[in-house]
Length: 352
Image (cartoon, rainbow, N blue to C red; front, top):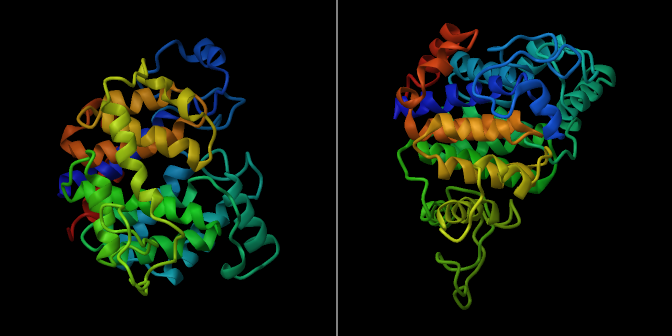
């Protein structure tokens, strides 16, 4: 289990670092012009693009935030709102300037710029800084949460939900963020990423381990006559975010559905940043290449658009399936903070 947990953490950061060079090319011909028809390793960013002040093998701002979250869990032995907000104020916002191209780690996302404006410029409380963004920032940031609380889905849920709504207020974004991180925890525990995974996730709902609204029977059949709502039903409007993974598994393995080459999944589901483009492609690639880390992250990167996040989230899910021991050594060795990140992975998973 520790090997799978470390694989999830390092796998996410490898995917993030692979995107530093070719991040956000929506014109694939332009991507080919600078990086060739197939990107197979870390690359330097162009000086006039999003991460121009970085070099190949670096993690950029979102990877840095994931690293900071992991350090928080190690330092405080768990999640607390107070610990998170203090870390954000002192260690992250203090290194930003509120502009897209300013601050530590290259490009600063819309979510982080909004937080900076509300928290630093307007001096709002942390209860007033959340944006309506439909991107995956909180989902990415909570990868260490899924790892740390892999053995306790209730605590995982409480931490992810509270942390998400501090920065993103949209209810559906919250449900998708929790669904991904619960799935990641299940894979770390050794569950198979197959067509049965959503049924297993739904079972956790009926056992009141996950705060999703569900009134149907456990196989999505007709609800029982006279059944009353349970106390945990209704935090998230529906459990559909938990059902998505199994549909993507079926698409990845259905012989009548062909996406070739696999990087074209970004064209099928969309290249942009919103979670409704990201998550189907991530689940598809993570299932199709469940035992092949290299193919999964490279097809994620070569699909263009928001390829950095696509590769990061895919890297975490496949890393959780193959373990750190199943990740090709060249990807680990190519990380410029390799020794520090491996040590952090050991500390983050020590209690598992």
